Length: 497
Image (cartoon, rainbow, N blue to C red; front, side):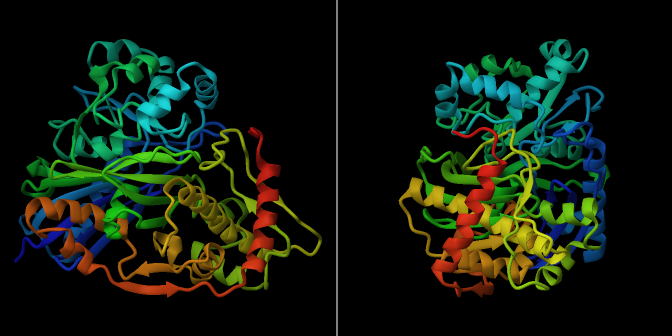
């Protein structure tokens, strides 16, 4: 029974976490470390790859110690990660050629604008299922190859390795023996063919990426490798891997077409399971792999909000109007409404369904009577408004009227935000008992591959409701607020189309 535990490594945008789950999907122990956010220029965002690795390793060791477990007690490791963040390192030394370029980074926006205006734009979207945007890894790889001295030559010579964060962790966990990615992370690079699920030669040529850089693409639930024995005292199988939003969809037991979840993290990410065939979006959403397991691939529609919970961090760190993120709700409740104040947090441009890379954040509707409370409420409402935008596009693409929205992530613990979200969407918003569904999804993928769970029905049985928020405000009142939001968005945008 001791091997009825799974260790999930959840490497996020602002912190690394490790969570140990038991066979009921309950948390046994966890550990978390924040790491530096590096902003070399406006619109540029970087992470130190060594800090990513060291913080993830330390949290894994701490979680094992807290649980009183050793490597031999762990059936497998599941990895989930911030997606699109791009790393290149030396295959011999393991040393990165520069900092990781984070998914939020906009340095390649002009290149992507040119690509979108060029003759290959429709082919790119059809091949990859993605829109052309600096968000994805492909243009970041190209930037490194073109701008870091010696990197192009070393890459052409096969001396370097590219990876998203999942690949970087596997490389280090295995002592440099395994250079792998999973199909969900690969589908976010702008380099994978969504139909063949293989690296696409046309995309490699178009972006100037040598094939020698790329990791092997594997499924989401299988024994991929083993950790180096020196790290935890004995090898542990690495048996599950998925990008954070795919893992959350799986952890929320959204295993049937039409089921959807929204994760309220640094950004907000809404995914709807669309089954065995990708739906090509007509409303500027992403067609993406949900997961691949047992030889079967399932797909999802996704809408991405670049700044969700990060708006609260900004109020805390840049403006200093709250001391800790959890203070935001009490401050927002000091006022009855937003007082006409709207906050569009386009710090890194606007994601779906606008895809305006050059938009920047705005606060509109300020008067002499506007207070910190109004700003706090407007910030929380902005998270919900952006998620409303996603669901409208998703409903139009899928033809499915959502029955309920399953939610997770740190901001889902905020009752004021969740109630407002339910009122805005007009459908119940449901939060599960285990809110850490990203890590839980990674654990489930690993546990399915190592026999902790037999099938998805066991996982669905583990899913339990913690809180259910029913719509409780008139649609007329919501329509008025939405009209104000749409005006605020138009004031923010620079690329109206």
